[in-house]
Structures are given as structure tokens and as C-alpha cells.
Length: 132
Image (cartoon, rainbow, N blue to C red; front, side):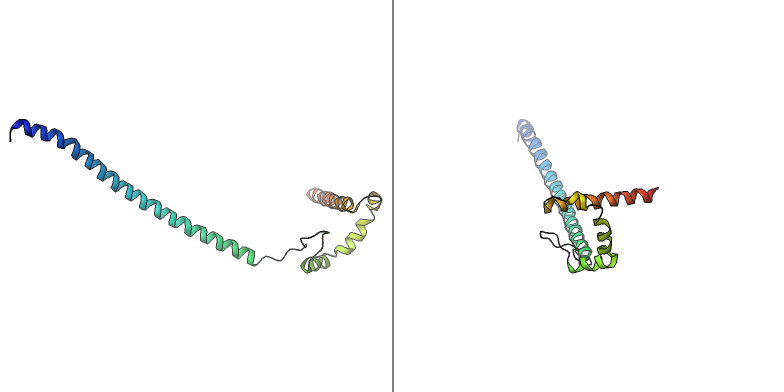
């Protein structure tokens, strides 16, 4: 072959070899990147499973709700047990006399709101007195 042909062939093959080399390297890097992502996803899935199991364990030992989810508000058996333990009926009898006047002439839902507000304020006063 003549020197001119070799120069032409070198000019043609040089960029082609470079492009092929860059593509091979890019494919190799992408496959290692894909592997890295797959490994991280695997560990994320495992951590999520562990987190779910921990949450299930937390809720397995939790006591039932003390209040039934219906209207009017009612205590469940567990709530009644708590009520007896803290002697809530006696406390309610003592505190009711303090709000009877405010409750007169109100609708049932208004009396309920009044009681909730009273207990909230009463609890807040107790907390503030304990901090002094």
C-alpha cells in the first residue's frame, strides 16, 4: 500500500478506535453503576422490611383503645378498667358541680365540648401548678 493510503486508513481508524474505546468504557462504567444502584436498592429494601417488622412489634404489645370509636363517646372494657383504677367516677362527680350552671340550656354536643374544654383547662392548671 502506498503511504497516502496508510495515512487515510490511520485518519479513519483513529477516531473510530477512540469512539469504540469510549463506548466500551462507558458501557463498563454503566454496568458497575447499575450494580451499585442494585446493591443500594437491596439494602434499602432490607432496611424497610426491618422497619416494618419493628413497627409491627411495637403495635403487637400495645393496649387496646380506651374509647370506642362511635358517638356518643363510650369507654371500652379497657377504658372502664382505667376509669376504675384512677377512680374517675368520683373525680367526675366532684368536678361536675363546678360546671353545672354553665351547662344549663345547652345542647348535648355543647355540653360535651364544655366538658372537654373544662378538663383541658383543669389539666393545664395542674401542670402549671406542678411546675412552680
